[in-house]
Image 1 (cartoon, rainbow, N blue to C red):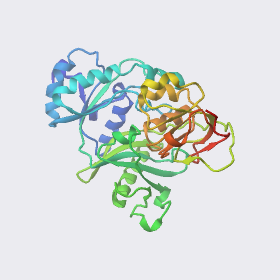
Image 2: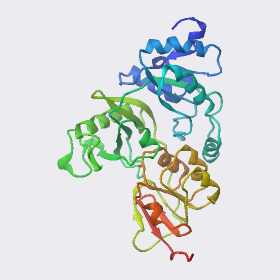
Image 3: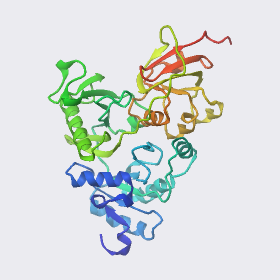
Image 4: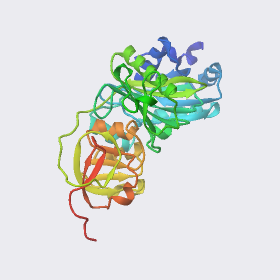
Length: 375
């Protein structure tokens, strides 16, 4: 790229803190030799000339489809991830990239983001840099945490889905889960462990043990590069593990227990955010029902998205029918220090609205603490 106008788009490999934490981290990974999809980054979407410079910059990348993502300075930090709070558009043709860039730049506002900022005390501030990368045609994708997100144990956790990872991070899909302890010792079913020691604890159809080991090895090497536990978004395409994002793990201390319950749990799911909390069940089916939710209730729903952040900010706990412990909603619940249980099959049918329950996000259970209310 040449000329004053084209200079507003910088090669991803040259990104620095001016281009936001996400782009700067990916640039560091590129320079360290990790496979990162090539791209360009715009430090200030208000800068003159970027739309005119975009087309030649995209042609230089030599691709037909792109991923357009935010890279704000406050994102992907050690204390607040802003997971899912700003807009991402995938599989964007070159003719629509400018529109997607504008949408991402404008996404630093809205009720969900406002609720997140108020709860965490962190703010985006200033313009939102935008990252455009070549779209990876993923056979499988997911997230890897180099520390257990709920217990904090030195245990690497991988969650994976077929195809793009959007269904995992959005909580719309319940993923396959793999784990590996430090020194590559398998955590369960050792006979099924691959050469690196990663073993499946839920599902077996997405990754082979060799692929899980490759993801685990990539995540551990990224942790070594950055010097702290990492949250790594990855994809497998053409037999290669691609790194889409790397950021510090943000996990708040668990809240103090607020109750106890005896008896058999009403249902069990995946532990997603530690601690216990009690409250009345409120089943929310969609955005048009948000006004029904009251402060301190237990949010029960099929899945959440960034639009649900205002409810998470007011909830005592959250229970979802789908999703995993590495989805955006689970990450936000941990940052908000509220218990969360995901992949709780049958939650909408079995948790009666108004019933007082105890949600244990460490064990992944929901237990009644009083009799069913009389209708």
